Structures are given as structure tokens and as C-alpha cells.
Image (tube, rainbow, N blue to C red):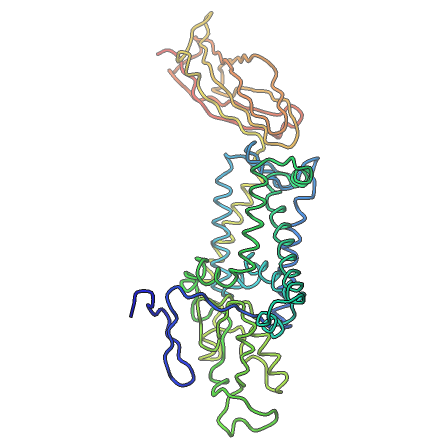
Length: 472
């Protein structure tokens, strides 16, 4: 066998003959049947609010600015009523760790529900499939249309599909880039052909990425590109609730007429209709058991339940359940791993919230003046020179004062060149000179605190510790 015919997957047809799929063979197009059911309704309740937030939040203004704006040139990240700077990077890292633990906890409990209901790849893919169904019809109609020769009807239907895809992709790109560029400025600049080349590039890039990803890649992203699909098995256990096929109830599969005593013929509840396969967005057969490609979307559950209703059989042949429940009839929800994840998650959320609540929008950094001596004697005083860097991260301008706190009994005096008035988001460095009578000094060096406080809002302050140095 030549090198380009390396078998990567063995499949067996009805006659028992083994067929080989070649190493770089492209997969067949997946035609998804439209189905209604509980999981489909839940997906609307989770996906639509997230889509609405994604598209409309950039258009809201708070105190004259965009509610959520990641201003990279200014190194300011405005999130509703709070502005974060590069020094708040630890909060972002903390937030990502919380998100990871939340993902671990939810996956241990409910499997890959994130992938099935709220993952952007799934949400946008479902929007694109909706556009296909509107323009080209349901599964069988789309298959016939693709097999038909090109003509006016096919061009019109296909053109309508791709036009909607491009419209969704462009709206997605505008919304995403608008978080960084400023959505109103972006739209106006593009309309007037005055947009920055980088803005045009990123809008074009994300339009193409969305169009290609949700329009053509789809299940291949979930199967081959998403790392989460690969390590999900580490978080699963015997009591994880996931989509399972009840083989004891369903086997042996086979077609039959409604109303017959199929048990007497040795058949199970599965009528082998393949609806569970036809609705699967990643093109797997859940009856073959747990597979890493499964995104726990529940569409096969809705499809199977609708077939069971038509046949007059009990629902739940395919359902959300655990391996333990299939084997023993019970699921253990009180297990150490789940409680461990939940405890760590709640603790981290509490600490993160405490950091946000106590975080001051005023930050001061104090550096000793490197160009000056360690200290200077002047008219009986010992002087130290510092540079105070003040960052006004608040949404409003403020005037600031600087004061000194130190050893009780020392008469500290402070000199600085001018009043300090900073606009919102402004950073300013001011040199100061701190003096102490030489006769009062009892040690070569001691700690002092430099306090920066807003005049109009005394609660906005930062207190920075440094060292005052004198003679031996």
C-alpha cells in the first residue's frame, strides 16, 4: 500500500467488508435535521440572551463613554463603572482561573453542557444552520438541492444562504472589534471610508473567520481543533450526567410496525430510524457509546423522544443520565470531586469579589530619586527626595493632596512643586521633598507612609510605604 493510502479509520459495511478512510480524506457534509424539544428550547434561553449582550452592550454609554471598551492604546479597560489598567492584570488572571474551575465543576456535574449550549462555536453554527433552513429547507431538501444541477433556483437559494452568513459574520466582526475600537467610531469611520487600516483589517479578518468557521468548519472545530474535547475525559466520572443511550432497553434494534408486540420478536425500543444521527451537529451515533466528539447538546434526546412519542413508547431511550444510573439505577451526586470543585470555586469567587469591592481607583507608586544623594542636610533638617507617580483610574477628574505618616514625635514637612489635578485616566509623576529635623532622628533609617488622597472624595486614597534615610 502506498504512503498516501494509510488507513486511519476502519469501517464495516453491511456485508462485513472493511472500508478504509484515507489519511487526508475530507469528510462528507453534515446535513442536520431540524428538531424541536426541551433541549432546543433551553438553547434558545441560553444562546439568545448571550447573543443580545454581545451585540448590544457596546452601544450602551455610561457617563459619556462606551460601557465596555478595551482601549489598548491608552492601556485602559473600561468595564461599566470601573476602569482597569495594566497593573490589574492579576484580576484578569484570577478571573480566568475562576472560569476554568467553573468549567471543571460544571463538566464533572453535567458533562459538556458549555459546549452544547453556550460555546460560541455552537451558537454561531446554529445561527448558520438556521439560515440554511430558511433559504434551502430542511435536511432532505438541502440534500436534494446540493445534488441538483446548477440553475436559477439553486443560485438564488444558495446565494441567499451565503448572504445571510456574510451579514451575520459582518455584524459579529463589527461588534467584536467595536469593543476595542469604539463601536460608534468604527461604524462611522467605515461608512465614511476614514477607518484606521488596522480597524479595517480586523473587521475583515473576523468576518472571514466567522464565515469560514461557522459556515464550513463546524463539527471539525469540535472534533479536531478544540482542546476541550480532548481532556474532557479527565473530568468525567461514573456519575457525570451526560447524554447516554440505554442499550439494555434499546437493543436489539430494528424497524417494526406500530402497535405490534415487538418484544416477542426479540426487539428493543430502538426502531433504528437514525434520527439521533441526523440531528447530531458533530455527526456521531450516540448509540455507539460515549465518544469524545459528543458536545452534550441534547438534540439526539429531543429526536429520540419525538420518535418514542410517535411509537407510543416511554421517553428516555436516549437521555441525560450517568453510567452508574444505567448500571445500578442510581446516580451519586454527593461525591468528593464535585464538592471540592464547588468549594474552591465559591472561595475564589468570594475573594475575587472582595478584591473588586476594596479596590481603590487611585494608585500611587513611590520611588526614591536616583539622581539625588541618599539624604541631604539643609538648615538643621535631613531631606529625602522621592518621585510619586499617581494614576487616576476613576471615571472623573480629581485634585489630589499628598501627606506623610511616620514615627510619632517626628515633625515631618513636605514640599512639592504644585497642586496636583488629574483628569480621568491620567497618570502624573511629581517630585516631593520630605524633611525631618536632624535632632529628632534616632535611627539611620525608618519607615514612612506617603498618602495620596482625592480632595473632593477623601475615601479615594492610596497609602504607600517607603524608607526615610538619615546620617549614621
